[in-house]
Length: 457
Picture 1 (spheres, rainbow, N blue to C red):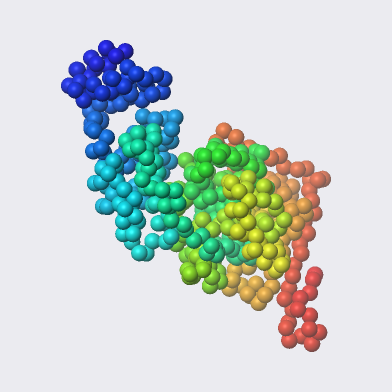
Picture 2: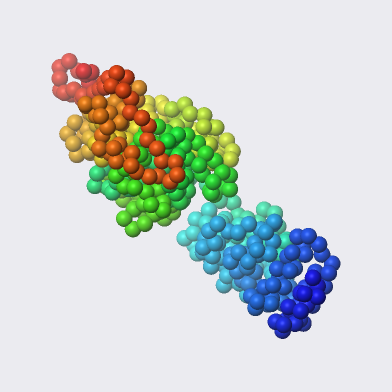
């Protein structure tokens, strides 16, 4: 093997630079030997330059990490970055200071200076994230790369981030307004409705493929996610019905949630989200203001909405973490105060998604169902009245119309396709069809001498 490696180095004109690698190959076994052979391969192909370790700069080693070449050399110790562009973005803030410094001469003072020169507008959480990247690069240079003997950054160097700011979340009636706003594209509303009802991270939902959904059994399987912890759970029945109807109207392509110009944004969707909330007539000030104690609402806060409302309605932390992927009870504990307020106000739970979105309700999501909320400019709703949907046990099934047959959307769904597991449930017989019950609350005349604030019919 050594003779073969030497011959390759000679043929490539790299024997002088390759001799230290040959000596290492002679003394190593197993994984360590494989790493040396990989380095020789790269040297022979002209993809690497062998240099004294003291000359390797921070910028050069950071490029090895971000490009994935270090993960190729040490697959047992280094994982490829899932989003290398985010690492590059953070490194760009510090490369002017740290980039040209050889790793062997990089000190704590260099790192402190790089952090002190970050732009003043960056939040504490952003500064912390950049510091974590610097620390990670130097940790990898220590091991497994062994370019430096020890990490010059001491324990506790990474700055703390103040994450105690209150986060925005929607109330159930605001969610209903958003879902009912027909001037917002349907693709965005079903995307928001899914996030709010299932608690998935926006970037995870943005990457969902049709094969990740099992609408026959009503489940989702999430193998690739932020914490590398595959998880699966049962989707809410109303979400399953809504997705079936939506996919009958708009068959899925390479992603589950697609907009006019491609997959909907898993990140950087906050401004669009706030604009859509305003368009739906939602004006609660704290949702749109950032102060020293509060953040304006972001697309990521659909998770905060999910956790808050589900805690308020009695769901356990285990049930919630199965969907959100939170690793500890402490992470969910932050939402309990807001959940207690929602419970005390009696704001209820989210409306069924297939009934909350008018296009899905009319297309077969809930045939004959009762409207959940009038538009903000509609008379009854704006005067304080509301429509309350029948309980799910009394609501008509999505597969039945008035004559007992299938709706147009469900007929289309039968021939539709959603990955390898698409299926639709069998429609119930006419004898088992539940009776539709409507419960309607009307606001009374406030000037009425009886003083009744509402009446039931």
